[in-house]
Length: 165
Image (cartoon, rainbow, N blue to C red; front, side):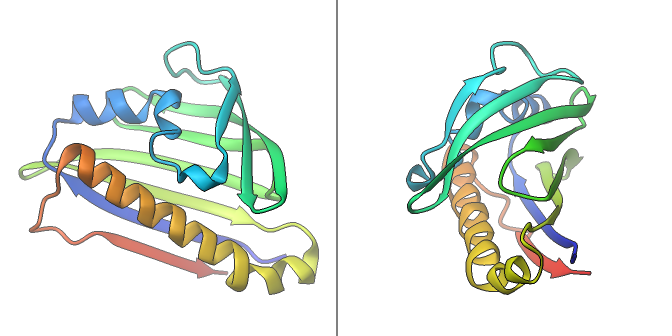
C-alpha cells in the first residue's frame, strides 16, 4: 500500500496569535472547506482544542458518497502546532500536522498530511484521478479563502506539493 503526502505552505500578514485562534478552532474548518463537500461538524468542537479531543464530521468527498469522519487531536503545542489523526473515515491513514511560525511581516502556515488510500490497487488507481485532484482542489480553495480573510505576503510564494512513496 502506497503512502502519499501533501505539503502546503502559505504566508499571511497576521500575528501568530490571530492565526492560532483561527486554525485551532474546529468550527473554522467549515469556513475553509468547499461547500460542495457537505462538511458538517456533528460533535466534539464545543471546547478549545486539546490533546485527546475527538471530533466527528459528516463529509461528502465526492458526489453521491457521504461518510462520517472521526478525528482525534493527538498533539497540541499552544500557538505553534497541532496534529489530527483520522480514527474512522474515508482514508486507510490520515495524519495531518499543522504548523504556524513567525516570519518577516507575518506568519507561515504549513500543513503536512501523510495518508493512505483504502482498496489496495483500486485505491492506487483512483488516487491520481480522484483523490489527488480532490485534495488539490480543497487546498486551492483554502488558500483563496484564507487569503481573502487575512491577506497575503506577496514576497513569499505559496506551495502545494503532492507526492507518493
